[in-house]
Amino acid sequence: MSRTGRVSRGTKETEVLVEIDLDGTGTVDIATGVGFYDHMLAQLGKHGSFDLTVKTTGDLYIDSHHTIEDTAIALGGAFRQALGDKAGIRRFADASVPLDEALAQVTVDIAGRPYLVHTEPEGMAPMIGPEYDTTMTRHILESFVANAGVCLHVHVPYGRNAHHIVEAQFKALARALRDAVAFDPKVHGIPSTKGAL
Image (cartoon, rainbow, N blue to C red; front, side):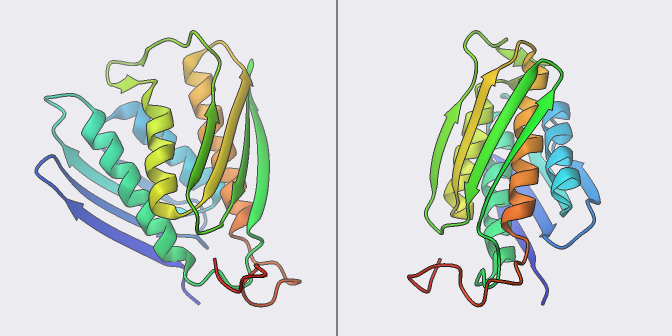
Protein backbone atom coordinates (compact mmCIF):
# COMPACT_ATOMS: atom_id res chain seq x y z
CA MET A 1 0.00 0.00 0.00
CA SER A 2 1.39 3.36 -1.02
CA ARG A 3 1.25 5.97 1.71
CA THR A 4 1.97 9.08 -0.27
CA GLY A 5 0.43 12.51 -0.38
CA ARG A 6 0.65 15.36 -2.83
CA VAL A 7 -0.77 18.87 -2.43
CA SER A 8 -0.40 21.63 -4.98
CA ARG A 9 -1.77 24.90 -3.64
CA GLY A 10 -1.83 28.30 -5.30
CA THR A 11 -2.98 31.70 -4.05
CA LYS A 12 -2.21 35.29 -4.97
CA GLU A 13 0.53 35.12 -2.34
CA THR A 14 2.19 31.73 -2.87
CA GLU A 15 2.56 28.65 -5.06
CA VAL A 16 3.27 25.51 -3.04
CA LEU A 17 3.94 21.90 -3.96
CA VAL A 18 4.40 19.29 -1.23
CA GLU A 19 4.94 15.57 -1.81
CA ILE A 20 5.46 13.10 1.02
CA ASP A 21 6.04 9.37 1.30
CA LEU A 22 5.55 8.13 4.86
CA ASP A 23 7.44 4.93 4.07
CA GLY A 24 10.46 6.63 2.55
CA THR A 25 14.07 6.78 3.64
CA GLY A 26 14.44 10.42 4.63
CA THR A 27 15.29 11.79 1.19
CA VAL A 28 14.46 15.50 1.09
CA ASP A 29 14.29 18.18 -1.60
CA ILE A 30 13.29 21.46 0.02
CA ALA A 31 13.19 24.97 -1.44
CA THR A 32 10.95 27.64 0.09
CA GLY A 33 13.20 30.66 -0.24
CA VAL A 34 13.50 30.86 3.56
CA GLY A 35 16.80 29.23 4.47
CA PHE A 36 16.15 28.38 8.10
CA TYR A 37 12.68 26.99 7.27
CA ASP A 38 14.25 24.78 4.59
CA HIS A 39 16.63 23.51 7.26
CA MET A 40 13.73 22.70 9.62
CA LEU A 41 11.68 20.90 6.96
CA ALA A 42 14.77 18.89 6.07
CA GLN A 43 14.97 17.81 9.73
CA LEU A 44 11.33 16.72 9.58
CA GLY A 45 11.90 14.54 6.54
CA LYS A 46 15.27 13.14 7.58
CA HIS A 47 14.43 12.26 11.17
CA GLY A 48 10.92 11.12 10.31
CA SER A 49 12.27 8.87 7.54
CA PHE A 50 9.78 10.52 5.22
CA ASP A 51 10.67 11.28 1.62
CA LEU A 52 9.71 14.93 1.41
CA THR A 53 9.65 17.37 -1.48
CA VAL A 54 8.67 20.99 -0.84
CA LYS A 55 8.75 23.69 -3.52
CA THR A 56 7.38 27.10 -2.58
CA THR A 57 7.52 30.47 -4.25
CA GLY A 58 6.01 33.30 -2.27
CA ASP A 59 5.80 37.02 -1.74
CA LEU A 60 9.05 37.29 0.17
CA TYR A 61 9.29 40.93 -0.86
CA ILE A 62 6.64 41.50 1.84
CA ASP A 63 8.03 39.08 4.44
CA SER A 64 8.24 35.33 4.98
CA HIS A 65 4.88 34.89 6.76
CA HIS A 66 2.74 33.77 3.80
CA THR A 67 5.45 31.50 2.44
CA ILE A 68 5.94 29.74 5.77
CA GLU A 69 2.23 29.50 6.60
CA ASP A 70 1.05 28.24 3.21
CA THR A 71 3.81 25.63 3.10
CA ALA A 72 2.70 24.33 6.51
CA ILE A 73 -0.92 24.18 5.32
CA ALA A 74 0.07 22.11 2.28
CA LEU A 75 2.36 19.91 4.37
CA GLY A 76 -0.49 19.09 6.74
CA GLY A 77 -2.80 18.28 3.85
CA ALA A 78 -0.26 16.01 2.18
CA PHE A 79 0.42 14.24 5.48
CA ARG A 80 -3.29 13.60 6.03
CA GLN A 81 -3.68 12.33 2.47
CA ALA A 82 -0.73 9.97 2.91
CA LEU A 83 -2.22 8.48 6.07
CA GLY A 84 -5.17 7.06 4.15
CA ASP A 85 -7.62 5.25 6.44
CA LYS A 86 -4.97 4.92 9.20
CA ALA A 87 -5.59 1.18 9.55
CA GLY A 88 -2.90 -0.65 11.47
CA ILE A 89 -0.91 2.35 12.69
CA ARG A 90 0.33 2.84 16.25
CA ARG A 91 -1.53 6.18 16.44
CA PHE A 92 0.07 7.48 19.67
CA ALA A 93 3.73 8.35 20.08
CA ASP A 94 6.11 10.64 21.90
CA ALA A 95 9.71 11.71 21.56
CA SER A 96 12.19 13.83 23.48
CA VAL A 97 15.12 15.35 21.63
CA PRO A 98 17.97 17.35 23.16
CA LEU A 99 19.99 19.84 21.16
CA ASP A 100 22.85 21.10 23.29
CA GLU A 101 21.21 23.15 26.08
CA ALA A 102 17.65 22.83 24.70
CA LEU A 103 15.18 19.98 25.14
CA ALA A 104 11.98 19.43 23.14
CA GLN A 105 9.25 16.98 24.12
CA VAL A 106 6.56 16.05 21.59
CA THR A 107 3.50 13.84 22.02
CA VAL A 108 1.17 13.08 19.12
CA ASP A 109 -2.16 11.38 18.55
CA ILE A 110 -3.15 10.70 14.94
CA ALA A 111 -6.69 11.35 16.07
CA GLY A 112 -8.43 13.00 13.15
CA ARG A 113 -9.12 15.89 15.54
CA PRO A 114 -6.77 18.88 15.36
CA TYR A 115 -5.51 20.27 18.65
CA LEU A 116 -2.26 21.98 19.60
CA VAL A 117 -0.61 22.67 22.93
CA HIS A 118 2.70 24.51 22.51
CA THR A 119 5.10 26.00 25.03
CA GLU A 120 8.53 27.53 24.59
CA PRO A 121 10.92 29.33 26.96
CA GLU A 122 10.18 33.01 27.43
CA GLY A 123 12.54 35.63 26.12
CA MET A 124 13.56 33.89 22.89
CA ALA A 125 15.40 35.93 20.30
CA PRO A 126 12.77 37.33 17.90
CA MET A 127 14.56 36.29 14.70
CA ILE A 128 16.73 33.46 13.40
CA GLY A 129 18.64 34.76 10.44
CA PRO A 130 17.11 37.57 8.39
CA GLU A 131 13.82 35.83 7.49
CA TYR A 132 12.57 33.52 10.25
CA ASP A 133 10.41 35.16 12.92
CA THR A 134 10.53 32.79 15.89
CA THR A 135 6.82 33.36 16.61
CA MET A 136 6.17 31.48 13.37
CA THR A 137 7.08 28.12 14.92
CA ARG A 138 3.78 27.97 16.76
CA HIS A 139 1.95 29.12 13.63
CA ILE A 140 3.61 26.39 11.57
CA LEU A 141 2.44 23.80 14.07
CA GLU A 142 -1.08 25.30 14.16
CA SER A 143 -1.33 25.19 10.38
CA PHE A 144 0.06 21.67 10.16
CA VAL A 145 -2.23 20.33 12.92
CA ALA A 146 -5.35 21.92 11.44
CA ASN A 147 -4.75 20.33 8.05
CA ALA A 148 -3.23 17.01 9.13
CA GLY A 149 -5.95 16.33 11.70
CA VAL A 150 -3.61 15.43 14.55
CA CYS A 151 -3.50 16.25 18.24
CA LEU A 152 -0.05 17.59 19.07
CA HIS A 153 1.60 18.64 22.33
CA VAL A 154 4.99 20.33 22.00
CA HIS A 155 6.85 21.43 25.11
CA VAL A 156 10.29 22.99 25.41
CA PRO A 157 10.99 23.14 29.15
CA TYR A 158 14.33 24.89 28.73
CA GLY A 159 16.80 26.24 26.22
CA ARG A 160 18.70 29.46 25.52
CA ASN A 161 19.64 29.48 21.85
CA ALA A 162 16.65 30.14 19.57
CA HIS A 163 18.09 28.02 16.75
CA HIS A 164 18.46 25.06 19.11
CA ILE A 165 15.00 25.55 20.62
CA VAL A 166 13.25 25.51 17.24
CA GLU A 167 15.36 22.77 15.68
CA ALA A 168 14.84 20.45 18.65
CA GLN A 169 11.08 20.85 18.17
CA PHE A 170 11.22 19.82 14.52
CA LYS A 171 13.44 16.84 15.26
CA ALA A 172 11.22 15.67 18.12
CA LEU A 173 8.13 16.15 15.95
CA ALA A 174 9.75 14.06 13.23
CA ARG A 175 10.55 11.21 15.60
CA ALA A 176 7.09 11.24 17.19
CA LEU A 177 5.32 11.27 13.81
CA ARG A 178 7.59 8.50 12.54
CA ASP A 179 6.56 6.27 15.45
CA ALA A 180 2.87 7.24 15.36
CA VAL A 181 2.40 6.36 11.68
CA ALA A 182 4.39 3.12 11.90
CA PHE A 183 2.47 -0.11 11.53
CA ASP A 184 1.90 -2.12 14.70
CA PRO A 185 1.48 -5.88 14.17
CA LYS A 186 -0.88 -5.98 17.16
CA VAL A 187 -3.23 -3.44 15.62
CA HIS A 188 -5.89 -4.77 13.27
CA GLY A 189 -7.98 -2.19 11.45
CA ILE A 190 -8.54 1.31 12.77
CA PRO A 191 -6.90 1.90 16.20
CA SER A 192 -9.99 3.37 17.82
CA THR A 193 -13.02 2.05 19.66
CA LYS A 194 -15.05 4.39 17.43
CA GLY A 195 -13.93 2.53 14.32
CA ALA A 196 -12.79 5.75 12.68
CA LEU A 197 -10.05 8.35 13.06
